[in-house]
Image (cartoon, rainbow, N blue to C red; front, top):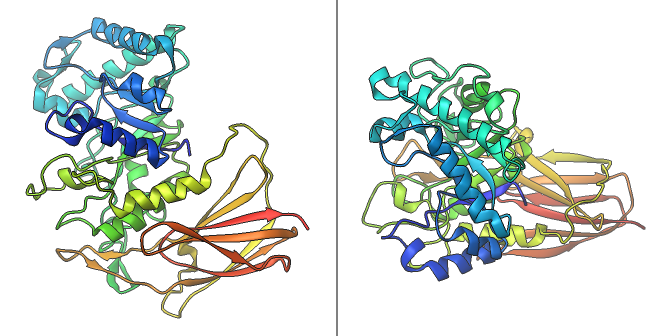
Amino acid sequence: MDSIGINTHWTYPDTPYVYAYEGVRDLLASSGIRRVRDGFSDRIIELGRYGIATTVIADLDGNSNGGKETVRKIVERIKSINASGAYIDTVEGPNEPDNFWPRHKKVYKGYGYMHGCRGFIMGAVEFQKDLYRALKSDPSTAGLCVIGFALCPVHDPLGSSPNPLGERELAPHADWGNLHSYPGNNPYNIPFPYAGLDRYYWQSNFPSISLDEYPWALEVYAPPYAPKPMVVTEAGYPTHREGVSESVQAKYIPRLCCEYFRLGIKRTYIYELIDEFRAENNGPEPHYGLIRRDLTPKPAYTALKSLLDILKDTRQKFVPCIPDYELLVTGPEAYFRTDFLHRLVLQKSDGDLYFLLWHEISCEDVSVVPHKELLHPDLNVSLVMKSPVRRAVQFVYDNSWNMLPLELPAGAGTLDFEVSDKVTVLHITLGS
């Protein structure tokens, strides 16, 4: 639950974040998501009182030639906001400085446009160093987690646009590394035909496409932070003509959160909570929301909320057990990659187990516009528990994207069920 956050824009005046704030806030509070990522705003304290912590993006204002005084002001502002509560618990370095710093001619400690493309990166690195040092040297902020800055996701492993940061360059200046991972086609592998696609991966957009089997995004963006763990502060799917359908977004968003956690990503911030601008803007930016501009939830909002409702727990600390089990997977002949059945095994403080399973497969062909939606058969799964099972309940999505329970026969030790390209949850209570 702690690994899931979402992006917001509380200061964008022409969006529902401002003119319909109360409604957006209430939908956020109901979602089960307890972390937001944004810049400084007057909403941070109130959100904290709703149990929603903020990851604040610390960046230079305007195009002034900033210095250490800028960083000191940021630290003092965080201390002021947190004076009566832990409203900000994570601080992130400047957002995509290789994109926004050149655009706004930002300069830090003399590093900027006069030093060429690398100058902006040098300035951002110095800013990150000073930010980390200032936060960790002040007793009031030393306990905050500091995330490094993410680069604009245009760099690649082939060297045509290499990562301008050196290996381990930022590791001493961040608790967690950072990347922006918007799942799209992955051309950095040898294509092969599979699941209705002539060139699988090249024509796919499933959540783990750049982080798992062919993890080019981690190979490009993780080395400057090695060996620190990574977070993804932006990842999502727009629902516009060149993006995904709302039903595919509903399949992908819960899977994205599960996949990234399974792969060791410390936290994933979905981009974003609500559609910002009017729909007549045909670009992707206004359409990433889990909620439409008129405050009606998209299926992805309902799908994620329903999953989080099942997983929430009252206690935070306990000693989990490691269950002894075996998972057997079979599929139709054409679906021979049974390793695409992915899983997470979670446990609550009462000892109950929650097996999260999904078929990590592409639900669209992205080589055409609009994308062609792909439908796949379910995989047959047998879960063999080595301990007695007192009760087993499978939660599956209905047509409205709410998870409904289905009681499974328990006691025999083997549970047989089907898994689709949507997340399914198997709630198991052990005992005779």
